[in-house]
Length: 270
Image 1 (cartoon, rainbow, N blue to C red):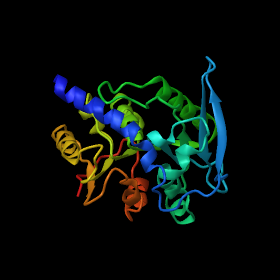
Image 2 (cartoon, rainbow, N blue to C red):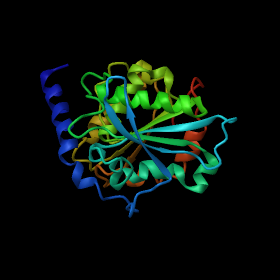
Image 3 (tube, rainbow, N blue to C red):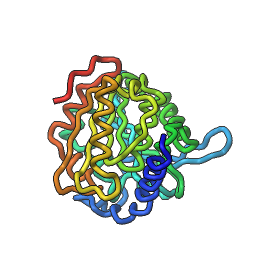
Image 4 (tube, rainbow, N blue to C red):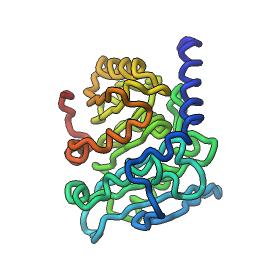
């Protein structure tokens, strides 16, 4: 990749993290207190590395049934060790939209939200490799799949901003694992666009985003289509980086995701 483009993408990565605090309190409904419907857990791997995570378990969970799961990768403002930031503030919409009674009736999904450590990233867009942090998050997913009755054909990726970088990486490294993916206000240097093309995908972007330029995302969508993908693309006028305020209010969001299963054919985007 040309040095200029590499430098530009690295600058955007830094900008995502630098502006994270400014987007932490833009959720329509700020979490006033800890939401205990999301179980608090801390995962420890074989080498002693720890990662906090939150897990929403559908009401009246029945181990004899198979359940879908939303694998949520938070933005930069969700980082830390408090086991709260990844489901609150600017990350509240992306975690709580799935847990309302009405949406649980359509998609009775688990919601898994690991928390990336401060000053770390889920992934870097130049390499699209699974970072140590993202690997621990995947290990948490594996442990949840072992403990609960999760439908392996209905595991959905969702991530915004820095979390979107992680979603892109997982789509490119493990494309055959996911039923569908949602990516909000995130960029990437595709290293496996044909892999992404096998996964139903919905991309969200604001045309006034000062962190991730809309022209870059438009070109990314074009590149994906050239690779055989059929991404659904929603671009919002006069909307900045906090595109999640509109994306997670899309009336078709839950029905669209609920209709996706791993390995099914992908219809052309409308």
